[in-house]
Image (cartoon, rainbow, N blue to C red; front, top):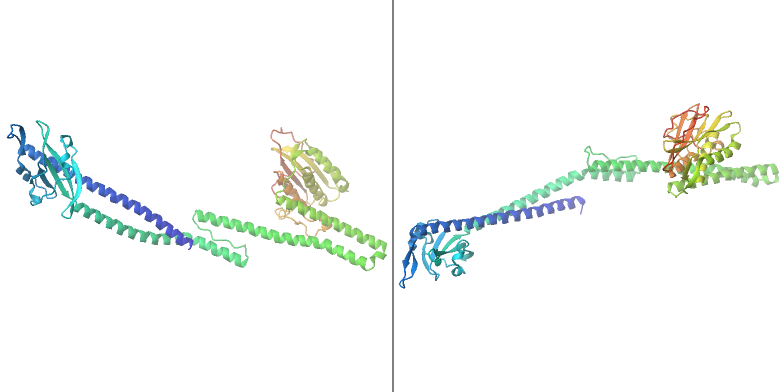
Length: 499
């Protein structure tokens, strides 16, 4: 069964239950009201007949034994004339004395239990419902009491047929059943129509998703409804998901292609050197030594690339890093000493140097800072200056590497942090690296709940920065000014060249 059919049935079922409860409530309310009206009519007639008797229908008279009794002039009851009500007078033995003319002489028996009524039952009476000659009626019996000695001298019975009440309730029942059936059919049709219109955007989303799956085209998007409702949010969410999937698949394909290309180059070089050795190169010591040196260099390059890829994979998998107190100024000095032999004709300096302690992984942070230093050395010409700096700023420890190199163009800034990206594709891989250095820098910064930034001006140089949050309670230090050789650029949340 489709969701649309289930929704229609559920709505119709709830509506039917509501109609049933409403119909029962209406029926019993009307029934209670009708019987309360019958009760009021019976009491009103009782008071009226009593008023007639009090006006002359009851006379005290002495009996043969000399006691004072009540003489009932029963003909006075004939004065009462109500076509819907019948009045009867009975003696204390339950024998009928007289009745109103509209009963046509029919004797309606005194209700059971009426003879047990006493003077105290004048205001309450005895109410009963029974059937007489195929007609249901309700009767009210009250005692006739002599005021002088508080003695019951007779009984007054007022009866009313319930035919009109039963007809009214029957008519109401058919109205409720017929109206409920019509309302249910209309509600079912309306629910089917509304569910069809409400689920139409979902059908469009489903067809679009099926088209995307068949065509394997993640560039398609589902239509977004104009109204700001749940379906609108669902469509926007699905489109965002499709955009992320498209980006992930595109990145994956590019990543696989880049890895294949990067691995193919050193493997091809190693295969060429092996062929040289196989064709007699072993007999030439100089040629053999050169081939072995080339293979060692390519092997080292493969090892570095695999280690970098492993580190990035661990970062993507959120592998837990070590958290231990770390003096960043000591770490920066170590990096400075390791970079100095590689600087050559480039001037390597230390700028601002605050004493800052953070919690983090020493090896990961050192690798990230080394990657920034090596990246700066690769893109800074001879005679240029590279400055390492450390300061506290806005609750962060700020590690900076500023160079006076070639800088980065604006069109390259949004992409240079991507894995295997090179701002200059023609640059040799031996001098330009594999394009994974800055990816590692960003991953390390994010693993420490920080981030990395770069600011650059083409032809003047770049400033890279790693922002690490300071431990709570760290007092801010007065930062030293940046050296004049470094470009004074505001950090931006963009990324620069690969290492």
